[in-house]
Image 1 (cartoon, rainbow, N blue to C red):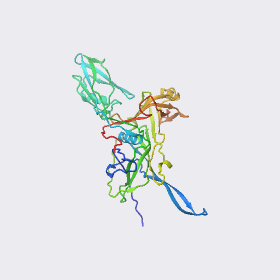
Image 2: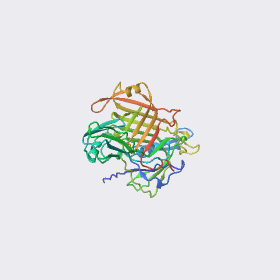
Image 3: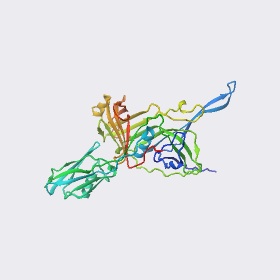
Image 4: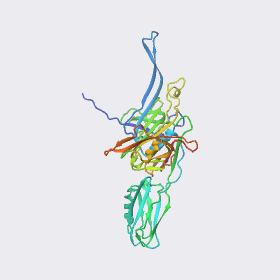
Amino acid sequence: MAGSFRNRKLFLAYPGAFKRQTAFGVAMANTDIDTRHPQTTPTYPGRTTTREQIRDCSGEYIIREDITSRLSRLRYGFDADAFLIAGWLAMAQGAAAAPSGTRVNEVQTITPVGGPITAGSWNYLLEMEGLVEAVDIPFDATAADIQRLLESLRPIKPGNVSVAGTLATTVVITYQGKLAAYNIPAPVIDDSGLTGGTLSVSTTTPGTSKTAAISRTTLDQTPAISFIVGFIDDTTNPDLYKDVVVNSVTIRGQIRGKVSVELDLLMNADTAEQIGYVVPNCVNINPIYTKDCRISINNVFQAVNVREFTYVYSNNIFSGDDAFPYDDIDVERLEHGDRTSSFNFTVYGSKGDTIYTLADAESVVPSQLLLGPPSGRVIVDMPKLSLRLPDDPITFAGEANRSAMQIQGTPFFDQLTAGTPDNVIYYGPETTTFLAT
């Protein structure tokens, strides 16, 4: 008789606000484990168990095995938005300040000066994060015309600006969408092609955002959370895992693709079935694309030539003898070792380019990785990034086999500068503080 195959869908639930356990060894309440986490591939926690064989007096026969330690591990990947990236980096680095500031969209006004405009056109040029584009706008363009022309610019794009008014009185430009709550650089207005007057541009409302600072904890132990793993269509009660700590976070971006995150989590292997647990709703995210990311090296944006990048933060959690108590088999604490991070990227270009010269000289320069559009992004700030070239720095990429340079970077600590080798800032609308209990 033919059997049937059941498609068992895995779920992993976690505290969606990135709360932490009140203490190591104290599991979170199920009501706090309230959100299903996205996964690109289903992954179930694995267990590492060490055993010691006990043999008879001849040494020939095994008479039993004693378990000496148990530790669970979960490695999985997912497509992410800025909030997820910020939350897991907060879990990894271990310290997070409360969000501060107010989200306000920027408003700029363009006003005729010296008389009515009667003929000609004016030019709007915007340089933002390495993208520079300009457009000519007729003097009698309607608000809808001006908005459409501004949306044709790569630094802006459709949906990210709203225009009211005309040059008959005043043009009011409000930045929104992916440019919401962002301090837009002042555009360059060329009014030499107009007849009857000139133009004055001003920022009437500067764009500001709400920010949350994330940094490395000064404690030996990083924060711990609890999560629940099970199957949506299975009657078996799901398992609660506690004392889950982040060993490493790997963030990758590749041209024309989504930004992906890989987590390496360590946790107590002692689980508990949760009777009657209601599977929560899944996170619906707006994934970050590599095209929305920027790399700044020595205060110069690499905006249009980025091929791929990888940022890795690792706690190097101790998982050997020091993680276990003297007389038990389950972990007592999971502390970080010497924390490390790296930032490697590939950009189109070749020898002679400024960035190649910097890396060839193994320069140490201020650098940033900006993940996501301005309205919701994570900035990894590296005040002193040591650049270098691999043994084979030049490669060829894409359908056209364009030359590209591989750059390796290591964030350095500067004792004279406040902060750590890689400071993280989250820009977003959320008011919740990461790592609250």
